[in-house]
Length: 83
Image 1 (tube, rainbow, N blue to C red):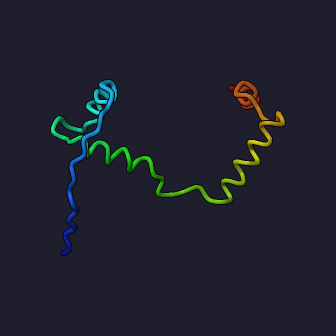
Image 2: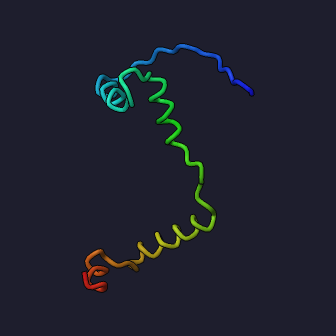
């Protein structure tokens, strides 16, 4: 069994009181540290499954279609489907 140890450092940062209130609301428990909250948020910011080149190409094609006016509105789709 291997145990990883991390060096711990303390850093003080200034945050807006509104941001601190939001961080408090994101705590999973009252005893959760801000470090844990921020770590969780940072983990959420990174996508473990990046978009493939094929998907990026299809998105670009869709954006070109949209700019050319080649799209359907929600109302048009609902009417076509009889909703």
